[in-house]
Image (cartoon, rainbow, N blue to C red):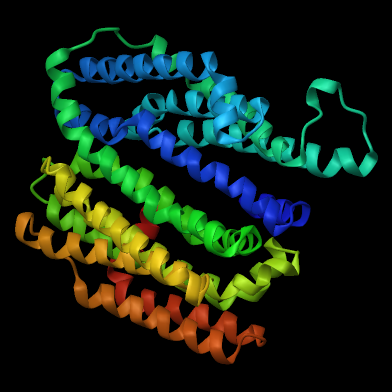
Length: 454
């Protein structure tokens, strides 16, 4: 679905328009972090260890409902003022505000699905929203202009506003689907639990803001320093790492509640080490796949050649995302030991690295600096978490295997990328070589796993 959307958006919008769309979602991300204020991670921690599970879910729910209600009253009451200050139309402001509100109210239901291991329910609900989002995008941006369909006046927007409209409708649909979770719980606010949750969650909030800086501030700085066309091309090519990004996102969603559920087990450290190794295997495979097939992917996902001059950022961004996924796995030690302040400081350090490199070097050296800054931020966070975690909560990571898989993946991908980009069979062979390597060294683990799946 994201492949289809990236192809659609980069064919409908020029880099400058794509830049505008990206900018709004960057700000959206920052406000979203503030509205959830670390409650999702805190919910996993306290629900998994507390005997008063109903009190945990109801306390978190009431807290988020109350703060979201205050936010809703504020933004809708002064929407004209905020729209003017943000230099956007009142319509666009209302759509963005509505998205923020309903997506904040997703947090508890989806966290509940994840902690319960209800992957099918989680997936079906999310996909319902994704399908609606994609269908509405294609309807308004592709079908309506093609047949010159006359729309009702209340549905006549600027083209970029149809993206926000589709997103708003999809967000509302998802919220309606998860709404029953709120009606199935007891409504009881426990102040003692709330105090403990806030103590745990505020560093997560700071870390979340710092993470958004690491992930998105480069795009705002590029727009400021180099212009919207450069930023739009950068943001479009950034999304070519989609396959690895989606895998990392799925990994994080699954692994976070899993870590907390395993925390009391005697074999927890070994389990965490195994999870890390298999993350590295699959992430290294994803990194290899995207790099060796980068030309096929750019032709499939980005048809407008005006975006392609930023293609050189993709290998660097992929490696940066690999480091980010490893960091998510390494973060287990401070999350299960309630030392979330470490996560906060790691993210703040990464944010400082991102800001320093981008603000000082983008103007003279161009957009490649932003890609290297992302890699520097995520790799430094990963290394800090590993070395400090080794002392605070020792986990027997198989460093030999982890480094070997990463080095093999990077070596093969760079050889193909630099020398054989036009030879398709060599690209396929490179994937087969890496898969064979995995099977040879991990067959004692993989074969029993495959047998269990039958």
